[in-house]
Image (cartoon, rainbow, N blue to C red; front, side, top):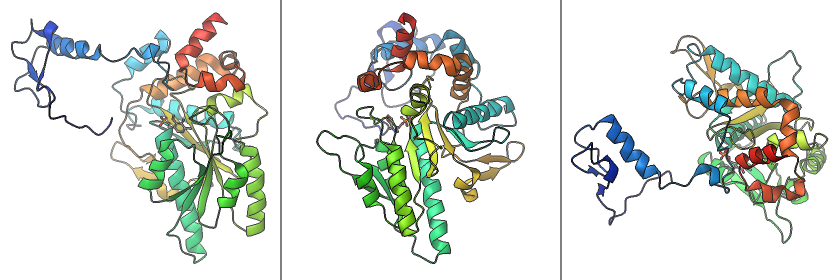
Length: 369
Ligand SMILES: Cc1ncc(COP(=O)(O)O)c(C=O)c1O
C-alpha cells in the first residue's frame, strides 16, 4: 500500500528481541527514535522484522522477476549508488539504456533504419511507460485539433474493460475519458469490432493489450488495426493504436514471430513493455518506444543542463537508480535472441496458467528442459 495509514490500536513500540543486546530501549513504531543506535542493531531490528515478509522466490503470484544470475546481481550491487539521470557523470549507463531502447525497438520491428536511433525511454515500469505514451497521444491529438480550430477539451481513450489499473490511473490523472469495451461471457479481452465502434473524433488512441493481466490472452491487434484503418479512411480521422505489451512484448517476438501486433502495423505508434516481467529484471524497469521521432511531441521533452550539459528527459520522475537498466542490458546480451525462446517454449494456450507464475519459474523450467 503506497498511502500509509495508522491503526489506532497499533502497538507503539517495536519489539526487537534479538537486537536487545545492542539497544537498551525499544524503538517507537511511528516516530523517529530520539537517539542513534549501533549499525549492527539497526540491521538486526530490520532484518528480523523483514523475516515476516514472504520469500520472493516462492511468490508464484508475482508477475515480476525474483531471481537473476549472481553475475547480474554483482552488476546491480556495483551500480546501486549511481543516479541514472546524471548522464554526464555516468555516460556509459546512458549508452546502455540507449542500446536497450534500440534492441527493443528492433525486436518490435521498428521502421527506423539500422543506422538511425530509435526513440524510447527506460521507465520505472509499464505504468510510467503508459503515462508517457498516453501523454504523447493526448498532446498530438490536441495539437491537431487546435490546428483544425476544433475543441480539444474532451479527449477519450478506448480500451477493453480488462485493462490494467494503470490505464485508469492515466485517465484520471491526465483527464482523459476512459471508454471501455465491456467483456462478454466467454470472451475476456477487448473485442476489436466494438472498440472501433466506440472510436470518435475525440479518441486519442485505442489501447490494445498483448497479454491481458487477467488471463494472459493476446488481443487481436491486427484485426483492430485493419478495422481502424477502414474507419480512419471513411471518417478522415487518423486514430492511432498503442500496444500495452507489458507482458507479451518479451514473449510474442520469440514465440510468435509471424504474429503482426507491433510496428509492422502502421497505426501502432507506441509500445510499452515491462523489463521486470518477462524482460527478466528485478522490479523497477519498464520501457516505452515510439514508432518514429514524430510520434513523440517535442514539447514533452525537457532539456535541462544543471548536471553538466544538455540533457533531454521525458520521464515523470527525475532521479532514480541505474541498476535495473544495467541488469536489462545484461539479460539481453547474456541470453541473446536464440536462448530466450527455449524457456518461453510453452504452448500459448497454456500461457494463462503460466502467466501467474513468475519468471524464476521460467528459469527453473529452463534448468530442467
Ligand atoms: C497489461 C499490463 N499493463 C500494465 C501493467 C503495469 O505494469 P507495471 O507493474 O510494470 O507498472 C501490468 C502489470 O501487471 C499489466 O499486466
